[in-house]
Amino acid sequence: MLKQVKDRLISLIFILIGLSILTYGLTFLLPSDPVEIMIDTMGLPHDPETIEKLNEQYGFDKSFWVQYKTWLVGIFHGDFGWSVKYNQPVNEALWRKLPNTVKLSCSAFLMMILVSFPLGILSAVYKNKAADYIIRFMSFIGVSIPSFWFGMMIIYLFGVELKWLPVAGFTTWKGLIMPTLTLGITNSAYYIRRIRAVMVEQMSEEYISGLRSKGISKRRIIFRHVLPNSLLAVITMLGMSFGGMLGGTMIVETIFGWNGIGSAAMGAITARDYKLVQGYVLWMGFIYVIVNLIVDISYQFIDPRIRRGMASK
Image: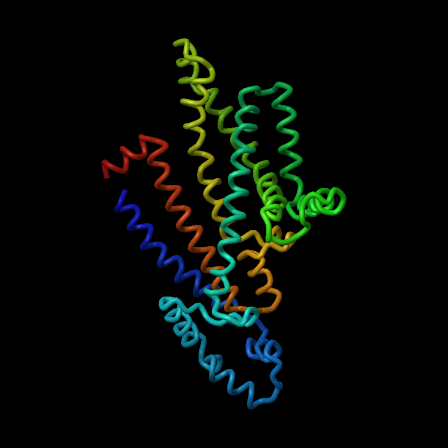
């Protein structure tokens, strides 16, 4: 297992370098001039002398590879560049907003688990019965509804009409409820259907008939055999969903005025703050690779066969 972790960490470096080249290259090719954006932000005059000085100061007069090398060396020293929008280093701007995104991600992920697993299991156990039809219909509606529409509807209901919850902001714990509901419920619809599908497939396997013939109770079969075997097909999706949440959900954070990484990235795109966009993309790549590594390691604890296979290598 240690060799696997070492190999994945080495691959992480190459993946992030490739991602950095792609990200920096795409932003370099954009028609917008970063110096013009900085001049507008700082309120400086648009004269050739000012433009030339800023180009020299920030190295924009150099070639692509020289600029990229300078940026990459800065990253290894913890310097991701300067955010024009927030007028501070990129790593400080992202780090300041990270706790808000982590708080929202953890609460939404927990809600997603609490909703999708019980309903998915219930739908599989009562296959083709009334409970199954109702849950499948509700999950179908959930998959069809865009998260931004659902968010606006609960804002109107709980924030405008009933006035139970704040419409936007995160100053109190009440501000966490509606974005958590939006992320948790809309994502749980996918997992209800997936959990049901893999559990129904497992329950049709021959070993289930053998367990039933031994007089083992239905509850024990489901929770000791069917559910653990079904987790392998779901855990990768769970890891990717949590990684996406940690990367910041732009639309939900923007709708609810949640001061997280996703809303910061959205603002950076609007303001053409390319350094912040580049830092955000690297953060997303780092999160997905780390989550993939954690998922791979978790397989070995869920399925002993994988653990024995890794030990034999």
